[in-house]
View 1 (cartoon, rainbow, N blue to C red):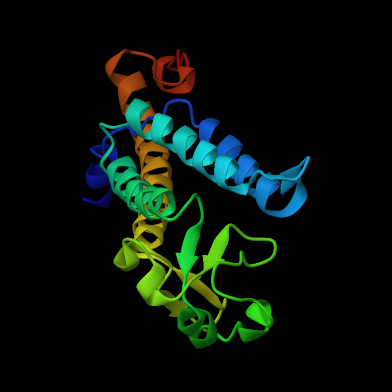
View 2 (cartoon, rainbow, N blue to C red):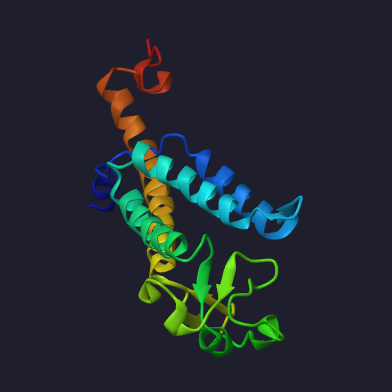
Length: 195
């Protein structure tokens, strides 16, 4: 029964999967390594560029339900970022609730949290507040996050699960396919001569 469920699992194919790590690389680079050039802050442009790459990945793989969940999260985050000048906004309260008050010590509303693409704003200053990083997690990994982030993580988990299950399904169905095509192992075809 278990084998039939696995073998009937649809083969999940993600095309142009390399786009996702490139998008992550762009985001990490402008967050931590090269935040400005000639006085121009690269973080907003880099963040939007990384999201544009992820939207391309979404468009290419739009028939995959897990990618659609991931894509909705990306679109929600991008809406908040574009509405707030190219940074993901958060509130001092959300940061404090996550136990990260030391990260914003000395920062004023409108400042960008060091080594991030997150801007500190008061709730009344945030456009599309409900889509911003207003949720907090104190343990095991203290952080602020958005509803979009939840959907992104859920989509990634489902994509990985789909890839694993489709690979298991391929391996389970491979021997059956070979038997149907008459390609069973030689030992089962050639019988020893007992004369």
